[in-house]
Image (cartoon, rainbow, N blue to C red; front, side):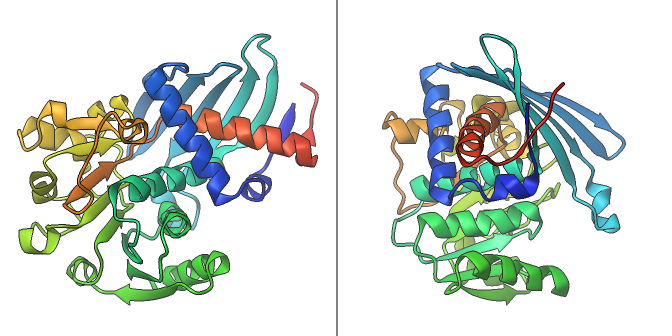
Length: 320
């Protein structure tokens, strides 16, 4: 069995390769050629444990995730995860992957797909609220699908912001990063807003004048009590793209607009339908996309990582 560390995973695939296999997972989901049961979600205290299986045409993946928000105060990762990739036909374990980086990469790709299909191609700036692990990845993946020249980021911590600048410029040296004190300031400067927080209350002002005509990518919320965007975002958009149907029951950013009747059920659809052409939207008006994640995205990325690792002789082989 091949063991892959976070560091090894980070070096195997390009942004384009990661986005391509994530789009392939979306198409497989639409075509029903792969299967991902609803993930098991167990809360304990302020923490969560998730079990996420998926079955494809050749492989099975099982990811176990621990989400511990209190780790921030201990300077430890909030998310820790491992993924087991198994041969579908023989049941043989093929690879054990440290899934922290895998999760960060596929979530970065999910956000980038939202930017790609729900904003104009000429967009050259983005706004970012939330500078955790996902915020870092959202920034660089967005830069890989749009000619981004400037990132406006909400600054809460000097050290974190410095690390963010170093990380982004390590991938995209010419991108200018400007710190902002408020969400209002970001909304006044850019038309694409990416939120990657776990806030239970909206991180943007409920101000129609500031929100109208902009493009919103929600990444952080993953529980029914969490909602990153204010109700007016959904009112203006009138439709909502999501990454999987299972997300309808998982996050407040989808549950609440539906429950309140702000968006009709028939106007909530998977973003894969934009890729296939089954649905269309006007990207010159307000758009909103919510990603909650799905095991199928992990499976497709794990398959690509495993194939590339074998090809490049990366990782450590162990006997069980």
